Image (spheres, one colour):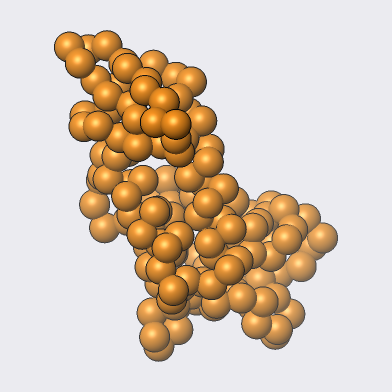
Length: 147
């Protein structure tokens, strides 16, 4: 069963891979059924290798790698933002992850980096974000440029 947070995470993931805005997602047995902005009906199902196959109109649009899907939609545990960034970094650098998936992962990383740099987020450990190192000392955020 798809939780509300998984459903919320799935909309932009499907939009990235299909290239179309997703208007609805529902469950149909083991498959997830979605509708695109163009009115097309699509299916998302886990295949035998654990990857997730996106089909629209009988055509396989994409196979999302299991590791990418699990990290973005179906995490097995709640993680700190620092740990999540490490997971995304590993996915981005993995030779087993396709170009299209790496594009999605890097876009999420860039968003998180911007959030970390511009918000009042205090890391639990020293965190490297691009050319910056962010640390928390006594509840105060320090940003050091490593250039």
